[in-house]
Image (cartoon, one colour):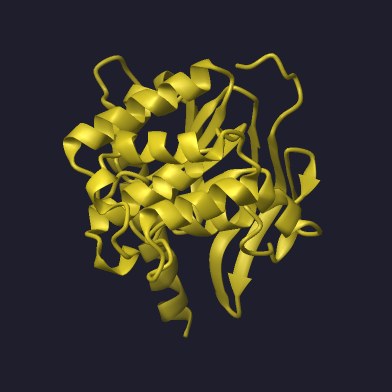
Length: 258
C-alpha cells in the first residue's frame, strides 16, 4: 500500500449492457494507492470492458466511477489526461514514426527533458534502429513496445494495462515486469487485465477472477486458494469451470421454459 489513504479507483455498482446483452454485470471495485491489482479471466470474459469503463473509454449503463478523484462519466477527457493506458490490440498511428509518436505523447503529457526521455525509452525498448520507420511497417512486438513506451514515459501515478505483454518476447516481458514492480515500489499503482495467471502470482497484491461479465472471486492470491496445495491455476479452473456450468444450466432452463 502507498501512503495515500484515499482509494485511487472507486467503482460503485457499475454494469455495461448492449441492448439485451450484458457485457458486465453489476460490480464494485476499489484500488488503493500503491497496489498492483489484477483482473484475470478467459478471452471474452469482460476484462477489456471493465478496463474501458474505468478509464473513461466507455460509459457505464449504471453505476458511478471515480478515478484519481475524477468522475469518469462526467470528465472522461480529464481522466485520460491523468493516467497511463495500454489498451488491448491498439497500435500507434500508422504514419508516424516511433520517435514522432513518443515526442507527441511527451509534449501532450508535459514531460520535462522531453528529448532525453524519448531517447531513453527508444533505447530501453531496443527501438533505436526503427526510430524513423513508420509504425505501419513495424512488427506487432515493436508496435507494442511503442505503446508501452508512451504509457511509461511520464511515469503516471496510475497505470492501466490490458494484455500488455501479448506480443513481447520473453526478454522484454521480464524487463517490463521488473519496471512495473519498481514503479509500484516507488509509489505507483497498476491495474492489469490479463489471462496469463503467472503474472498474478509474480506481481499482484490483489486480484479478481472474472467470467461471463461476472466477478467470481476477488482478494489476495493466497486467500483465493482453498488449501496450500492448490495452485492459482487450480483456483482459476475451479471458478471458471463452475461459472460455465452455471451459465449452461441457466441456458438449459430457459430453453425448457420456451
